[in-house]
Image 1 (spheres, one colour):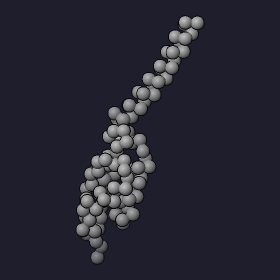
Image 2 (cartoon, helix red, strand yellow; image 1 turned 180 degrees about the horizontal axis):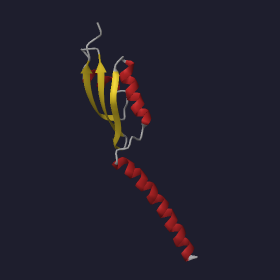
Image 3 (cartoon, rainbow, N blue to C red; image 1 turned 90 degrees about the vertical axis):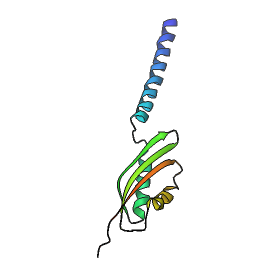
Image 4 (cartoon, rainbow, N blue to C red; image 1 turned 60 degrees about the vertical axis):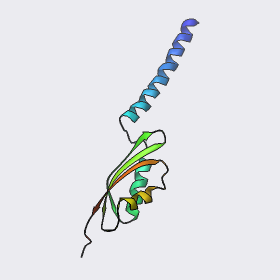
Length: 107
């Protein structure tokens, strides 16, 4: 009976440790855990008529996400603060870096 209890305990601990390694490995390798957040960031930028070039969203801690987005816009008056204020609706975004590339409007 002791042997059986030891084997069952070992299986429970092995299952728990596998899940822990999988979850922490994803965090340490900066995997994108929330594809929906990345798409939401893209949609907010592109709903203003601009183009989100190469957006990156990743987890930096429990409940905190970071985003880096390069934006191509034809509006010369739009600066990074314009896009940061548009992205404030997402409470999980703790750190946002925006690069704005102004393109001349077509004549």
